[in-house]
Image (cartoon, rainbow, N blue to C red; front, side):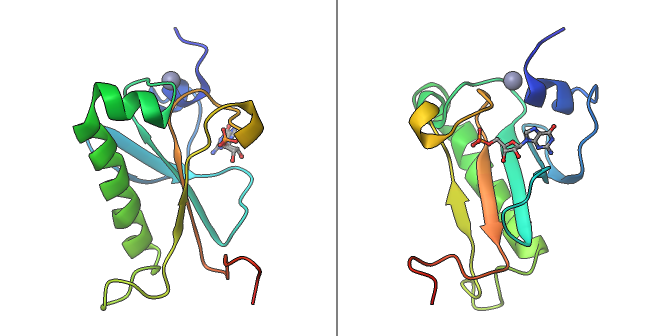
Length: 119
Ligand code: 5GP
Ligand code: ZN
């Protein structure tokens, strides 16, 4: 039994709106979406931060990013040309970045204009 929210979602102890998974990665809709598409992609194995994961299992980090691309294509964010309309990946690390769940997760955001400043 773990107190990690995302480990518990992977284990099926807490419900998740799953949009994609493989044997090693898991993707589900964020409960508080900040864009029309807001999906979290996580490794099924517990790792605290994306930087730690890069050092300990770079291949798994690659699978997380690949799964984000798969989700973006499913959501219609990647067109036939491979780019349009596009999406944003966000990975928060630490309190000043607003990391609230200490299990690596990449936010996949899209479906609205995300540029700075909005134009
Ligand atoms: P962070 O702020 O750590 O980068 O992102 C954590 C994300 O997890 C937030 O966007 C938050 O809305 C999402 N979240 C927190 N609790 C739950 C939950 O129980 N279910 C889902 N689907 N998302 C959650
Ligand atoms: Zn975990």
